[in-house]
Image 1 (cartoon, one colour):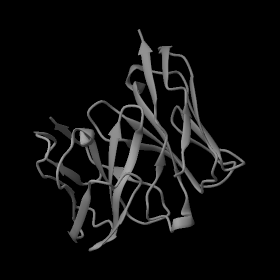
Image 2 (cartoon, chains in turn green, blue):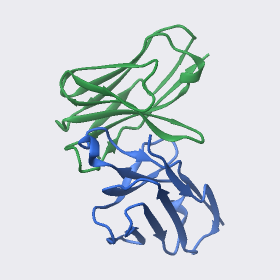
Image 3 (tube, helix red, strand yellow):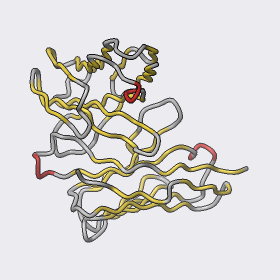
Image 4 (cartoon, chains in turn yellow, blue):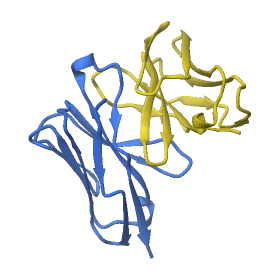
Length: 113
Length: 114
């Protein structure tokens, strides 16, 4: 299994509070991604990173920000959580662009009350 | 954005039956992939396809990259209980350089009845 660790695995928070999810990899892969998974929507890309300090928006980036200060860590932040951000969040890594072979973490389940 | 239409949404089958699911798109993809997700876990790559017309097998799984580059199918032969899960197709479009990840279908839930 690819060395990807997500934390926390489960979190319950209240509307309006900030939340940060962490993805840590030990594979030294250049590309990292944050997806959210919701019933009826499959997996949708939030943000991605193609190197340290290099990030870009995905399909559903509103309300989210990311940071990557080290190769191994990719943080996803919800500045002010809303109930619509209740979801399961997956981090994924890839060794190179164009290869398409993403390796996923185990997911972080976030509930916003 | 691009969309993948994956069907069927769910399948209820008997153990030992063959399974077939497919994915179509209005856009051309350069790579097609199939993932499986078990409950409480992240998706795991099953098969990757890189050329139009390519037919690839992985054990009881067979997948094909459509000639038009707009579709792909996955077959599972002689299903067993551990095949239960959600199967996702995914496509990669390299027009943006490929760094922006994959577009995923909404998944096919495979349920095996005893």
